[in-house]
Image 1 (spheres, rainbow, N blue to C red):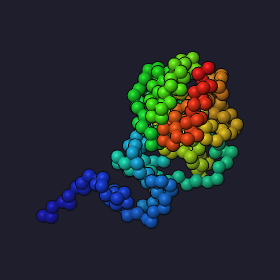
Image 2 (image 1 turned 180 degrees about the vertical axis):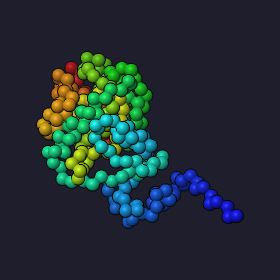
Image 3 (image 1 turned 90 degrees about the vertical axis):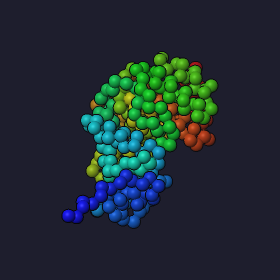
Image 4 (image 1 turned 45 degrees about the vertical axis):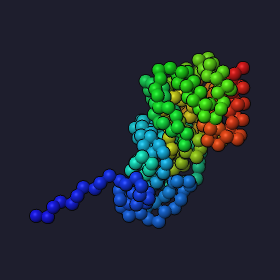
Length: 275
């Protein structure tokens, strides 16, 4: 009797990533780079995106959490994940339209409408910056701990500490909700299906205003997006004044990773919130 074929062994983490993906999924088409450590490939007639780097498992978990949230923005499917490698389905894109912006507003509001029990948790990374996944029962304590930890990475503890000390009065009611956590315009894809897709999450329990504030940090938020958001979930009074507060954490992340103008922006926000 012919013995059955041996079961495949675990993936070799030292092998080049094309070999690892091919071993798991099948032969690959020629690779096209989509940026640093991100590649578009074709396997068995299906276009897939391969992303390399730390935090792949965290990102995969975040995509699954977003996908499970009723009415939330769609995300790519997770096809394969290893410690430093994530493969997802590709999104067929189209030019950005007013309909995309309205869809993003409504679907973000539906994502934020589902409450969580705890603040924090979720991902251990924001981009290439590690963060603590500790959970907290109090929003001000969570944001204070995160801001001070990020400030320590870029030497801005003296500037950030007064803001952390005022969070109980600065924070708005509401939350925690599941938030994307790294929502800048580069992480929004305008789908050919008319929907607005999200990628590269850093999910956690946060305040809903956090995602909108980060969008505004890297480009204006269209009025139609805000209106469509408020059709589903009205913003709390005074949200405009809190935008800099919720932009401080991503500014500190960028100051830690890149320095330069991000550090100056973070210092300016700290001065305005410390008065």
